[in-house]
Image (cartoon, rainbow, N blue to C red; front, side, top):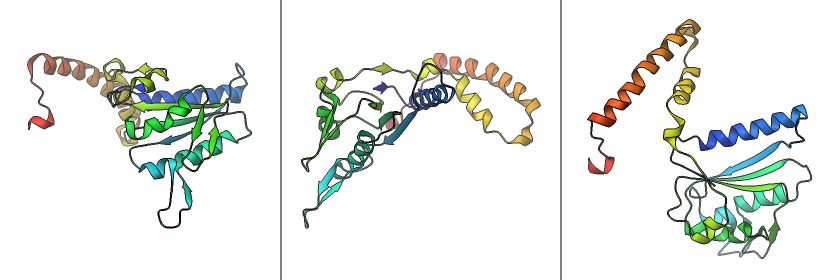
Length: 204
């Protein structure tokens, strides 16, 4: 589980790690494998769309997104690393259905009766803001990496913004723009924290 507030770099860390492993595989270094990953937001869809459900009229089973991804990865013959990334809040509505996967058995049990065994090349990764709704049983089954937005600093955000600037600004101006940011942002942030009150949206 990658735990941290928005803008702490969770998604970028995963993407850079995946790209690095793919590059190592391409160059034949350290005998690493490339990465294939699928990202799902479990809170953007219903439980039936997530894991699968029976049609109330025809009683036919329809696979959910997680079931399709698990089946694709579990029965794949290539040796690449396969990550199933859940990018969204952890709550008891959907995470409890993953307990059999998080156990040592590593099996996804569907309501249809189908059981999908995770392969050795598969991994589950959760990107969450906090663990306030996660049960101790869920937390104890996962390894935690905590990421703080304050530890990231302002430099990567400014650099990302500068990479998107139009070419008419000219490359010769980039050093001056960065220097201005380095002069203004830390001092402005320090002034705000020491001398200003920040009101939350709920108080307005």
